[in-house]
Amino acid sequence: MKFKNLLILPLLLFVNNLSYAQKESTNWNGKKCAVVLTYDDALNIHLDKVIPALNSFSFQGTFYLIASSSVVTDRKEEWRTASKKGHELGNHTLYHPCDGSLPGRGFVTKDNDLSRYTVARAIKEIRTANQLLKDIDGKSERTFAYPCGDLKIGDTLYYDYLKKDFVAARGVQPGFLPAKTVDLANVNSFVENRTTAAQMIAQIEEAEKAGSFIVFLFHGVGGEHALNIDWEEHQKLLLYLKNREKDIWVTTMVDLGRYIQKQQSY
Image (cartoon, rainbow, N blue to C red):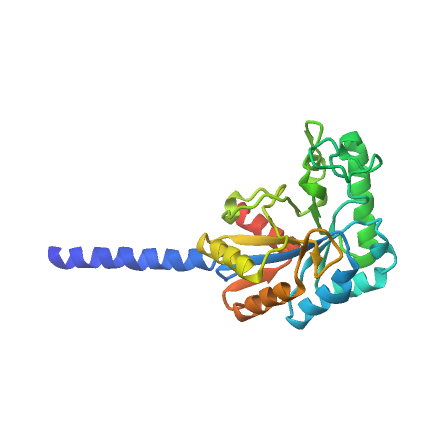
């Protein structure tokens, strides 16, 4: 009898460990990994080429819009249509202020220098952008993306005053984290510039191995921005994701944020 019990115990441990591993490996909405495709700065190419491409694969992306941009104000109906297709219109502020006091920030104008902002001004402009976006898509739940990845005005983390306005905020630091340790005020992302599809696929595979997720941060796709990836490489990435739909959850930033909130509440 003792010998029989010695055989059963390891078997039970193996079954329990296998169940745990299976649970852990499908912990992103029932899939092994989550991927979020985000596109910054409200470019014409996003409306003209990226959104039709995503639609053709039945994917939804997150588009972080500079609310004062002419590409937003002049093409509201097209953004509204995109929202109805499931794409997220995210808040990338009203004027895209960046900290001009940092090295390599010669492109920052005096009017849009975050280091010259007060916290009150930043909050007011971001909330104004939220209202303008709501006028387009009718939605109240939204995510935020820090312009240039700048988190502070002076020593103040200005988003601390806006946490109730958003589901999450996307930062610019890469990393593969489990849901329970994600900082929803500074969600990790991978900035893509001149990256090949093979390199991006390798990043997805790393996220999958880690039981994590990956947020891609794009600007130009086939042009229109200094930070750019080739159109063909973007298409190859979408095809890979389509072929891996069984294992990879392609979602929006707001849906990922809600999912992580739920995981962190347990």
